[in-house]
Length: 306
Image 1 (cartoon, one colour):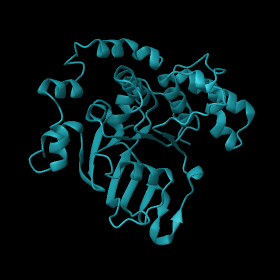
Image 2: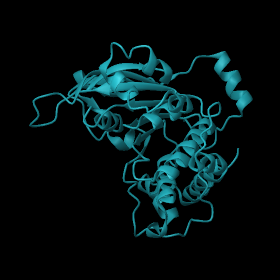
Image 3: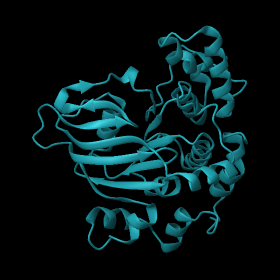
Image 4: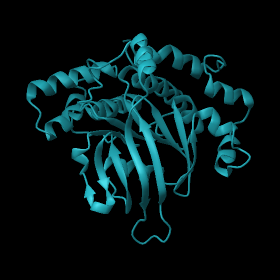
């Protein structure tokens, strides 16, 4: 079983593995269609995407373009009208055969926009909930909760009630709860939108470090170009339920801006060439703002060093 909490890789090991074999496909979406009841236009139109092990693929586009619908179909919270979904070699949805695996059988972790932290539970109880629902043994629940809280930098917060957590701490609890079941893929539905600018930047750094340590596939939904450019290995630009373009961040915003209206519109929101270069190469183009300096210094506090 894929075990991201126990299978951390050193940088040397990661480079060696990348040289030996290409990345495997974690999730494959093939020809998905979705129309909501009462709607005349499909929310998703013939969407096909691959998400590879160890990468962050971002769905980027304006509100209503189908990003969250795609994410919810992967999670099993929505059922496509047509098309197939595979997790590796395992068929999760085959519409022609009316095969649909329920959400609790898909082994995915999901972080919602609202975090969904239960106020009547402590941090440890929130994180342990999916394990209890799956009837894990008590000793394994304790071990996993301790391990994942240490991973996200919340050791010592086990008995803290949910309402007494800050926004950033609540987000880390949501990440811990999503990771504690050792999912095959982590789904992120605009997880930074409720944070202020400074904390959002800090958490972006923390999530990127976490993903590299665990080598887990992430499908990330956002309408914020800076978040997409700074976090993603690949970006899929969506508009009106269609993936108009996909590729590495630089290619999405440079090669097809003259022919792709979505790419042109998104890229046009950058206020300057320097801001663009900072998003692509933050180390080469350091910001002079205190927020970015604080974010860089605080990365170790968000995600403990390996």
